[in-house]
Length: 355
Ligand SMILES: [Zn+2]
Image (cartoon, rainbow, N blue to C red; front, top):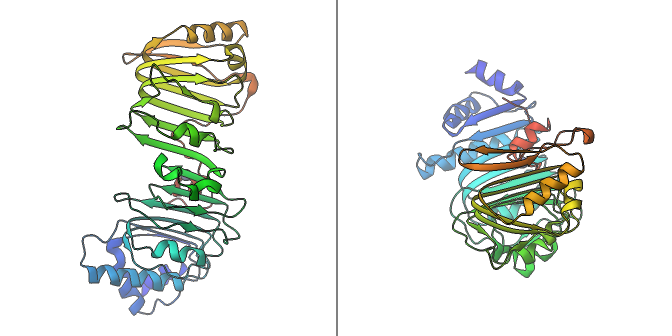
């Protein structure tokens, strides 16, 4: 155990499973009293198999560890229930998932004054959460929320916001007004949704949006096509549903536009010649296509000297414009998170160590 203590005291990055806590507690008893090199700590699993008393003991070990690691910069954990948040004044990157919050997470986060990125994920059922006030965290530049739905949110001036699976009813609350301008990623999946509800009105307030991914049952309908006018400033759009009815505005900033209708796609372009010239990468996947718009688009691509492909794939048809090589550079594919605050993003950017 002395050897373990010595190794732990020298570790730069540590990944522990919840079950390892007894060993850690024992090492602490044997004289492990400082983790002076530790910069990154990841806790995987949760304490749901133990008794509540054991869970509390694990939590206390963790708090001890955090207090004894003055160089800790990255902390990632998955908790069953967060009952108390320790002082995290040294942390720069916090990635926290929890099934239940007693309200203490939100109350204590502003104490993490050095925090630059924050990712909060609710792994249990949606819960009503109080408003999240992070306005006075001077260094916070990126916040990612996944299924965490505070009643409202205030953020520092330059903080970007990335939302995953947060519905329109939450975002329609006036307490979210100022935050919507800061939304950079909006990713929403709900196959029970037949209509888009208040999303079009909310889209119009996403003034700094870069990535939109929607996967719902129906996007618009044959009577009411979904206008993408409010998303014209985005860079990447991924729109998926069984039936997809869209109108594309005359001027867009899109770098990548991906539309998939498992059954049907109907799309109209306000200015197909402009779209063909301005959007470097466009994919359309459908079983059945309504209207001649994509024929007009492929004709416009051909007229502009752009290459394009059309082929059958697993019962669907794909029409796509490969990236124009003259534009150069790689286009990030969908499925790659760009939030900047989750562990995938922290590892990719080199901030977090890869085990
Ligand atoms: Zn990410």
